[in-house]
Length: 364
Image (spheres, rainbow, N blue to C red):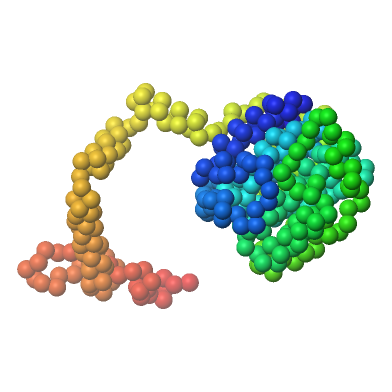
């Protein structure tokens, strides 16, 4: 749905994705077609550390999300609203889920989009190339201020100020009109832009490295493959899954294997529930489980702590008794009776085998 031809449908898909990504009501603050702000604190974004579940989600699906963003940004049917919505998607990814490895991957994606917009072989209309440059410029400004890396912020604003002087078409607000898609940006040679209008890979890499971030992945440019399986990023290597059964079925020489039932959390949950309903659980275990549940539901924390302490004292006393019996055992020949006290009952005690003295005839 996110890569269909209709720009209206793709816009709706992006808006749905925003509701899934947004944790702190940042969408309304980011979904705007406005000029670049030199101080994003005026926007009032809420930025907090991403949860572990969100981090795992991005590391597993980050490559697929980047693939779809690239595809959407390069669609020739895009309207102004599409570009604004895609910027909002990119911004939410870095604001809500912007951990180190995801941040570097998003920067790499942005540099790849900049290269596409500057490529003479690209078939994108001039208006769309300008919109791409504007989107990327606004995005780098957001990243620079969120990370607070001085060298990165300085480089970003150097490029923005150069565009403001001589190339305002490369800055937001974005304005794509159906009647002049081909004429917008005609005053610039978009296929051969001066270096001062472009964000430098070398400067960004050095800025990230100086701040302690691992920028090594930027050395491998993002390569987008149309109509191909989405490539996995370095952050996604741990989530690659190989289905051996499916691979065997696709081989002409391998024997066909029956599909095995997939084990999921829901299937395990159904098994546990069915066991409880069918009464397959042993009665003793069930009574014990119910007693524990009842005690936790009807007892206070102090009562539970007191019961646990009493139980611990009983076990400790029993353990001390066992240790005393082992330590105080009289040392006598194996199996011989000992009676330390004549009035005490006869007891059979033995010494450990390694302390026994055997006759020479019994030893090899």
